[in-house]
Amino acid sequence: MRRSLVIVGAGPRATGILERIGANAPELYGDSVPGSPGLDIHLVDPYPPGGGRVWRRDQSPLLWMNSQAQDVTMFTDDTVEVAGPVLPGPALHEWAGRDGRAFLGRREQSDYLRWVYERAVAALPAGVAVHHHPRRALRVTGARDTRQEVTLEGVAEPLAADLVILAQGHLDAELDPEQAALAAYAERNGLVHLPPDFTADSDLSRLAPGAPVIVRGFGLAFVDLMVLLTEGRGGRYANGTYLPSGREPVLYVGSRRGVPYRSKIGYDWDGERPPLPRYLGPAEIDALLAAPGGFDFGRDVWPLVEKELGFAHYHRLFTAHPERTRTAWTDFDEKYEACEPGSPALDALIASAVPDPADRLDLTALDHPLAGVRHTSYEALQDGLRGHIAADLARRHDPGHSPDLAVFLGLLSVYGQLVRLGDVGPWWHGFFSYLASGPPGPRLRQLLALSRAGVVRFLGADVRVAAEGGVFRARSPTLPGQVTEARALVEARLPQPTLARTRDPLLRALHAEGAASTAAGLLAVDPVDGRVLDRAGAAHPRRFALGPHTDARGAGAFTRPRTNSPTFRQNDATARAVLDFLRASPAR
Image 1 (cartoon, rainbow, N blue to C red):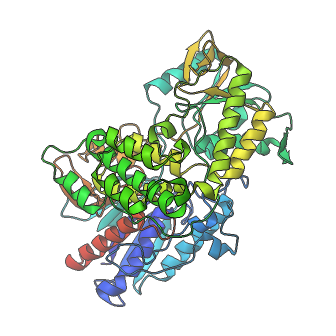
Image 2: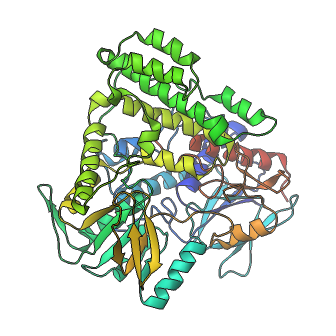
Image 3: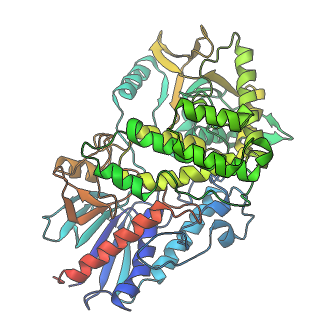
């Protein structure tokens, strides 16, 4: 009987696992797979292999990648710490023959992912066959010591599997109590309520031309919404001015921070890189994992993160811009090491060595850019927010502020280390995305043009939305006393992928039958190879899970070259665990 591996999901995560299976199989087994009957790999996904749902080709050509083409790869390099072989391959810009600084369309990314998928399949050893089932997986059953069965929608006979990998990617979710109440209120009053969703899949036709729309959320989902409701409705840009089509709604946008994510940095690195990790590396993670009472993120982890990011920032400032410092780097570095994060001694050291406050790293101020800001008029609020965005654009495109790029590299290093801790809560991921995963600079310039045209209007920070008076009303302390009314509310963010609210029937059943969840409601897995854990902490020998619905979410299904991405490490570990299992267990 042929061996069988079922991978639920056929997007870039599944493609990366296929690539690692192909890379590791020759090393572990020679030119053939274990067991002369061979191996069938079944990919179960309603969407095409390679891109999957999120990166499918069938979406608006107006939507871009959020990263420069040179910062997107599906292939390992010599910085990646994996047990298996490193097999380099082209990054997106090399494959597409495009400028590495360009932000390519998602359709081009979809084509790249499809090519990587086909290359990965072609590289699998003889005896391995890949089958795509364009359906949903509904359930996985089976004892720990027997083959598993995966039930597919609309198919009577389940797929038999020696092993199952859950790589579904981003998932839909049931409404939480707040969203359910807002939806019911909208239904009663004839309003429009669009809950958290993938913007490309939302029914935006319900938003009428010229009508005010309250938008809660200022991240990447908002950027997609902005594009689809402006250029997507016939508007265009000319010399920095937006020329409306007349079919756009008016977007009143706010969020907790009240500002968009920080712009992508618009220059390349040169010179010496900060030697990372320094204060948050494998030894510190080992100590946190070994702590008898466990660890607390705010108490035990964040101080290490803060010190690591500060080290990256000041290393770059002192080595690349020494004229803006008052002491030698070696002296500062020695004293910095002795200071506790957030201590008066550290503040005094930085103040004495770095005279310009604009050159000092203040993570609290970065995370709360409108803290304490109060405007006295609607026009002043709009001017203030446009000023903030313009200043951010200027700074993030100025190599004179290259310590910002060093902090970005520090964030990538920290993210790669924290993966080993599992679920550290949603705040860290939001903070990381705000600083490291913001929109392309051209998108923020478009936002400024839309603001000047009156198509986008800013609400401020800490926005609260009330369902009252038959409408939605938004308020923000940034402009005290201002109330914005609208008959439409859009929640511009992705659904939270918790097991309790996911619409994925397989994951819900898995949880109901004993799979563990984390404090944030994610599927609990072994952080090394992704084996699914039960509520006693035991790893299932035949079930694995990787992706945003787990606490081994990594740093995205594809990643920036030469950053030792945890995604590659996880994919490699899972692939090797799969091959080790197949080698050790007899074919049945």
